[in-house]
Length: 217
Picture 1 (cartoon, one colour):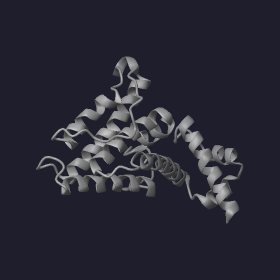
Picture 2 (cartoon, rainbow, N blue to C red):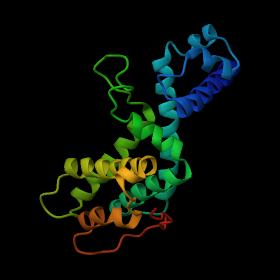
Picture 3 (cartoon, rainbow, N blue to C red):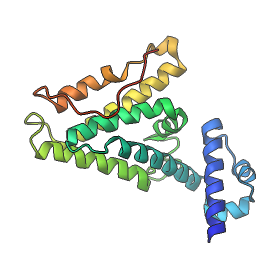
Picture 4 (cartoon, rainbow, N blue to C red):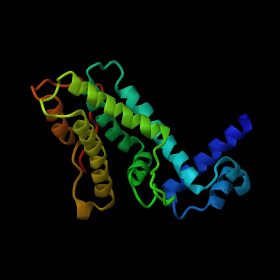
């Protein structure tokens, strides 16, 4: 069992490296097996198809994100502070691990990869689901405690947090890849301002444990 686990981890690591470097479609299962030091038949005993490998890599990336976000919320109690820390931390992770975040953003809701099985279900792995549930739980707590203006629903707040956190990352990705066409990146503090105004309508400053180091380029 331990040997199978080791092989499985090697396969995921090889898939991840090749998907990051070449992309999902150009990478062949033969390349993955070779890089992992196993045979294709041995690989398919652990992962039934290439789509399963994509899901495994996707899950491993979200695990890294969740671990990073969890650390950012240590010692915070106000759900608004936790949301702000999560979003800031997610954005800072783009600087530290751009390949991980770029892979997630390029595959989050992408019909070309997540729906490659040609079914009606996208990849929602355990770790991605954990991230979404955490955001939803915090947004519900914010609304239930009356911390935002009346009329702001937990569902709308949840969708806004998802949109702004991932939208900024897409913007940075485009700015990094096509600086002439897209323009300069917005800074973290500037990008956080709309969320700050929504979460703290009476002007209380959030308690943040992750100071911004992001610079505009």
